[in-house]
Amino acid sequence: MRALVLSTDGPRVEERPVRALPGEALLRPTVGGVCATDLELIKGYMGFEGVLGHEWVGVVEESGDASLVGQRVVGDINCPCRSCATCLAGHPTHCPHRTVLGIQGRQGAFAEALSLPASNLHRVPDAVSDEAAVFVEPLAAAIEILQQIHIRPTDEVVVLGVGRLGQLCARVLALTGARVRGVSRNPARLELLPSHVGRATLAQTDDDLAAGRRADIVVDCTGNPDGLALATKLVRPRGTLVLKTTTHDLGDASPVPWVIDEITLVGSRCGPFAPALRMLEAGLVDPTPLISAEYALADGMQALKRAAQRDTVKVLLRIS
Amino acid sequence: MRALVLSTDGPRVEERPVRALPGEALLRPTVGGVCATDLELIKGYMGFEGVLGHEWVGVVEESGDASLVGQRVVGDINCPCRSCATCLAGHPTHCPHRTVLGIQGRQGAFAEALSLPASNLHRVPDAVSDEAAVFVEPLAAAIEILQQIHIRPTDEVVVLGVGRLGQLCARVLALTGARVRGVSRNPARLELLPSHVGRATLAQTDDDLAAGRRADIVVDCTGNPDGLALATKLVRPRGTLVLKTTTHDLGDASPVPWVIDEITLVGSRCGPFAPALRMLEAGLVDPTPLISAEYALADGMQALKRAAQRDTVKVLLRIS
Image (cartoon, rainbow over all chains, first blue to last red; front, side):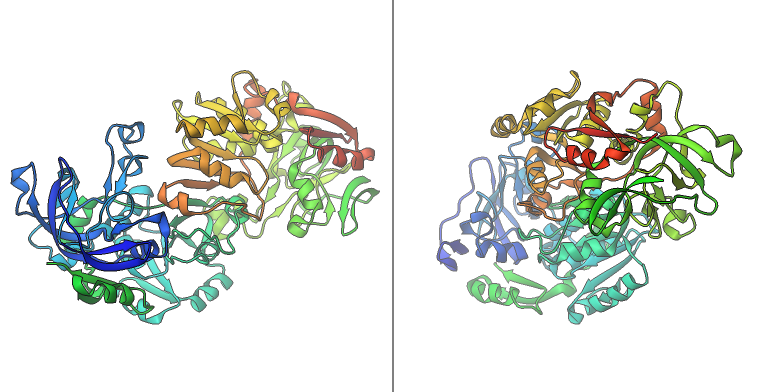
């Protein structure tokens, strides 16, 4: 089967067989989404080799649960052991024995077939298109912020960096009634924000700082090492800094203001799929304006190239 | 009046006049305590110049509130404006206009007299000796952790670094019923922990890590840049890391595990004096075994030298 595969020589589209792992479902992806993590994996992050892709929507081809066959589904990317102390304590996405679709120890979704446990699957309501459903995984990651911290309707929230994930975070956080502002160096990205989300350039945040205005909550979605130091400047004493950026380098960040100003930093990763599907079905969040381009799986190399360009938000792969 | 004064030439004992600031109380310190922050100020932290010292107990000499005169007191070190948005939002210790005793914009307590607002003062119960009361400020900083986060009686807590502040943190956190362990490179420091607090060398924490044991809560009291990276290794996924160390350098720390493991980091600084006095009065915490040495104010330079030695925990200054 055709697949977009990462090896030590880099990524390429090739043929390789895919079967369901024992006890798991076999799925036929229809659409995949390229994520910043995919681009990081290509640079060597996590040392991953194999089929790329963890954002997908598709149809169940084979499953021990016959009622699933033929259903349109999305799937949780973390596959925990469900029996260790971490799983039993209610943190399966942190299972130390987990595999992660297209990221760690498990073949990904940019292929004509993939295997996942049936327990990871969520049916996609008819009202949600494939083009929206393919955003469920990153939308769940944005919703994870609401799972972790209490955002009050009176809070001032800054989403720093409004690329792929930041756009979704801004949309989700604005549902709380809080005043949400996206901040970016890139005016084109700011224009993609819905009208009820505020927007500011970096220069405008300098004005805020000069006037002593700082946010209750700042979410670092910059994906770059300078994000954390800037986010620290933008948050008020005793405020909360949510970390969505996974870069090893800390840039100019220093823990001194975190201690002096008693900042709370909250690392945030994968989130719950069910509320993401509810939000899409209810029309509370529309991710489809974020689609910059769509490529066939056979043109996967072009898709990756496009996803890495500065003006691109989301690139989709049409798989079947 | 005699005072231990920091100037650009370094610290020295000298004579200087001290009067109450308008509307404030004049206090006669009896005992002062040397803190790691004092040693950092001498190295240039905060750019402070003037009388050092923020840990003290003393007697009220003059006050607009006549009932205070002659009382034995301790005093909050943060002097907020009480009228800005931060103060009115209930965060006076984070007032952007604050002065801080012996740290920022305000002469400190290592002097035969000092000025503080009467509203900062707390009477010391008779059952609490001067030698215990001088620990109220750092004890309050340890209690601040309980003010900020919920520690469950079933939690595993590691206090990393058991010097001046770490010793107090370990004692306070053990009051929750949680299993608390102090971790240090220095076996002599571990021996100072009370018997109900566990202890481990760094080598023993390696064994824990090899066995997959990680703590629910880790408090970094190392005071050195390597503390944060080590604390990150010792905390479980979705656990909490409390930051008490204010070093600019982050050592080998990286935000990647904070995001992947969804760690919460909580910066923690000054705490409430009233519960600290209650704990001392009730005998719940006894800080006096931490006293390594006592010097007269006239021998302040020797006191600072002794405080900087590796085997020293707390050095007191006998002021009057």
